[in-house]
Length: 141
Image (cartoon, rainbow, N blue to C red; front, side, top):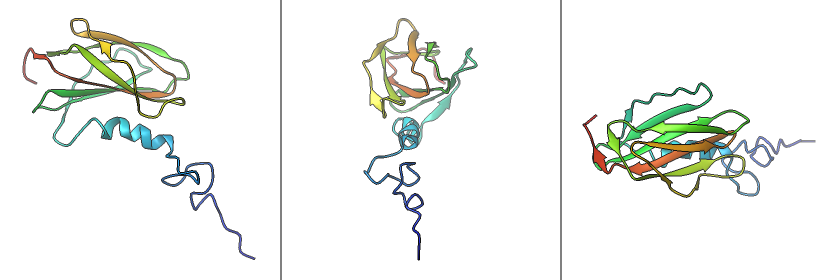
């Protein structure tokens, strides 16, 4: 008698394959999308300062058209209020895109940037990408 390991064939509920038996993508696909959807070939990684040990942040910008993305990972089981400061450029707003237990790379309401700062509460166990376009460069970087 042959026993088939349905989980190894992607037919279990653990999302071990590209999709599960219902055709649903695993959350890790959406997490990867937080970078791959916004950070495109030719973009440059830009420096970030982070004063919160609980949040992991990376940032990138397109030197050709002024698009940028700030990706914030909250590995905590609690939501975390986070302050962001943009240095060397300005924008009017950023659009958060969230992957969490409740959301899968879902766009949120744009957040206004005041001067060069904006605040956002990062959901628990989430990755949030803030996408925007530079409206005024103060210096090239």
